[in-house]
Amino acid sequence: MPPADTGASTVVVGASAPSSPVTTAAAPAAATHERLEPGRPGYRRMSFALFAAGVAAFALLYSTQALLPAVSASFDATAAQASWTVSAATGALALFVLPLSALSERFGRRQMMTVSLAIAVLVGLLAPFAPSMGALIALRAVQGAALAGLPASAMAYLAEEVRPKALIAAIGLFVAGNSIGGMSGRILTGWVAQAWGWRAALAAVGLLALACAVVFHFLIPKARNFRRGSLNPKALAKSVATHLGNPLLVRLYAIGALFMTVFGAVYTVIGYRLVEEPFSLPQGVIGSIFLVYLVGTVSSAAAGRLVARLGRRGALYLAVSTTAAGLLLSLADSLAAVLLGLVLITAGFFAGHAVASSSVSRTATEGRAQASALYQSAYYLGSSAGGTLGAVAFHAGGWAATVALGLLAVLGVVSITLYGTRVARAERRALVPATATR
Image 1: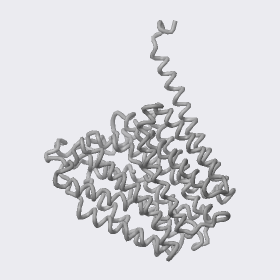
Image 2: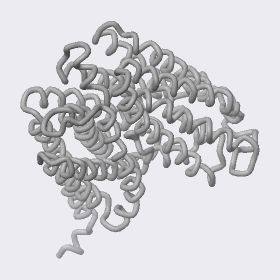
Image 3: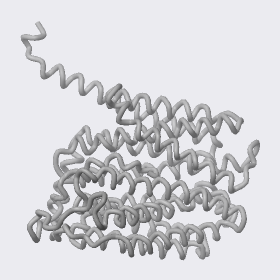
Image 4: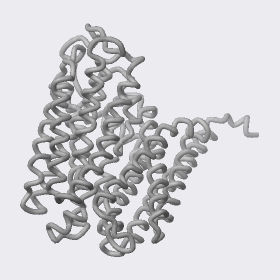
C-alpha cells in the first residue's frame, strides 16, 4: 500500500491464486460464484468502496506528519518527540500486517477490512482530544495496528472476487485511493491547522475517514468466493522462515526499508525546515508541499519501462542517483531548489520502491502473500525509523544532518545492489561449463 505504497508488489500477488500456506482450507477452494468485472453488477460498487477505504486508511496513517511543528509547539516537544506520532503508527502497522493478514484467512477479508477501518476511524476521532504527547502517540500506535488489517485483506479480497483480466485495474483504483488519501490528508491538515489549529485538523481527517468508512460499509459487496480456513501457525512460521532464508528476498526487504528511511526522514522533517528562516512558510503552504507526491505516481508507473530498458539493478542505480541528487539539492537556501530537490527525492523513491516491491512477488515462488507482507513490514519499519532518526538528526545538526542520514541510507541501497550484481555474475559464471571457458 503509497503512500507511500505504490502497490507494485501486490499487483502480482493479487493476480495469483488466493490460496495460502497459512491456513488449512475448511471448504473446497474453487470459486462457486461468478467473479466481478467491469459492466457486471457490483463491480462499480466494489471499486468505489475500496477506493474510499484506501483514502481513509492513508489519510489517517499520516495525518500528523504535516502537523509536526504545530504539535511540537503545543506540547513544548522536540522534533524527535513529535515524530513519534508518525513513527508509532507506521511501526505498529509494520508489526501487525503479517498476523492480521493471517487472521483474515479465518474471519474473512470483508470482515477484517470493516473492523480495521472502524477501529482506526474511532481512534482518529479521539486523537484531537489527546491531553498529552504520550497519549497522542499511544492512540496513533493503536490506529496503525488497526490499519494493518486493511492492505493485505483488500488485495486478497480482490484476488478472490474479481476476474483476473480486470484485477490489475481494480487494484490500481485501490492504490490510487492510497495515494490520494496520503496526499489529501496532509494537505487538508495543513490548511485546517493554519486556520483553527492542529486539533481541528486531526478532527477534519477523522471526519473525512468516517465518511469514507460509511461509503465502504454500504457499497462493498459481500464476499462470495471466500473459503474460510483454520489458522495454521506452523505453516505461517515455515513460510516466513523460508522467505527470510532467501538472500535475494532479504536484500529486497532491506532496499525497501532503506528507501523508506530516506522518504520518512525527509517528509517528517521538511515541515520544521520550511517553517523556519529563511522560508517562514505558513502551515497551509507547508501542507500543500505534499502535492509533490503526484510525481511519485508518474515515476512508479514508469518503473516497469525502466526495468525493461536498464534491468532491475540498473533501474535501482538510477533511482538512488535521483534520490541522492535531490537530497543534495535540498541543502540550498532557495525555496525553488528545495522544491526541485523534493521532486527528485520523491521520483527516485517511488521508482526504487516499485522496482523492489514488484521483484519480491517475482522472486517468491510460494507463499507470495507472506512474502509481500514481510516487504510491507520492512517498508513501514523503514518509515518509522526514518521519521524518528531524521527528527533526531535535525534536532542535533539541522537539515544538513537529516540529509546526511538520507545519503547514508542511499549508500546502503547502492552497497546492497552492488553486492547483488556480484552475486548474480558469480552465479552466471558457475553455470558456464568448464569446457566453454577454455
